[in-house]
Amino acid sequence: MMKRPRRLRNNELIRKMVRETRVDKASLIYPMFIRDGAGIREELPSMPGQFRCSVDRMCYELQKVSDAGVSAVMFFGVPDDKDEAASQAYAEGGVVQRALKEAKKRFPELYYITDVCLCEYTSHGHCGMLCGHEVDNDETVRILAKTALSHAQAGADMVAPSDMMDGRVAAIREILDKNAYINVPIMSYAVKYASGFYEPFRDAAKSAPSFGDRKSYQMDYHNSREGIREVLLDEEEGADIIMVKPALSYLDMITKVKEITSLPVAAYSVSGEYAMIKAAAQKGWINEAKIVCETAVAAFRAGAQSYLTYYAKELAGYIDEGRIG
Image 1 (cartoon, rainbow, N blue to C red):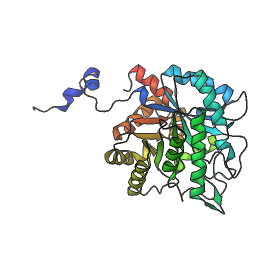
Image 2: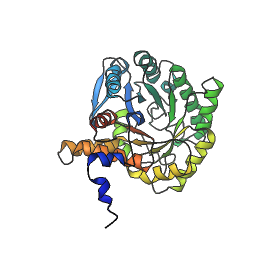
Image 3: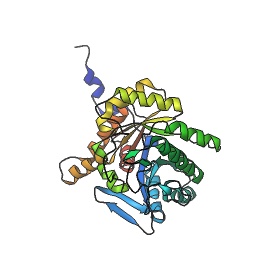
């Protein structure tokens, strides 16, 4: 036989030399839950190894992120006070705003991305302003833009709207530019499915809706062309990065998005993915490190250039060990 593909699999050196998909630490983003209060670092029951931290204790986590060589984090706020107007989302003294100011002072080398959504801040748990039992798209967009601006003013390097309201990217871009934040990029959750994989996150962020569901604004997971339409609209409105969420069950969408846009593509390995791997590993049913590496490479192989994952610190260690890269 003249053609023997196994020649290029003969040892580790040649396998790495011809590797098609590469992962590096610079592509990793670590999601963090920041809550009101003081002296708090509470482990999440549905996400072992992940924590809700008050601003004064988040630096312990940020130090571990920095030490691991991960350069970017995303903040999710968990306020004590919630109301129908989501007023703590854009308050100058809101939990994310305070976290940004403190983090930028203590760890200026890190890159800070903020989740821009209202579900963590509303008393009813929906991602926007209600009109009866329906989410008012346009009023929600106004509040989202106000929230994004408050994050930029507090020091956010990037804002990431995750609400799935129509027109929010354009509104955020407009308000940022009008206030001289022209260099703050927008990472749009453009392809965000109404997924069962979010349950541990809703527990962590205390953001489960008090009635109904989010299917009127998050996407139907039966659809792919709808996702492409969302990407093209957000690109037209001024998005700088496009995100697909969740990652593992939507690898086909990562690939499709990569093929139709010149914008960078991010994928979010969400809480349910983390919880499944962690639970199976704790039972001794799987090798945690192997599965974490394999699922991460799957996202990058599909076309992701950035990867949001609760395993970011571990993945950075696996890269150092040569298990992945």
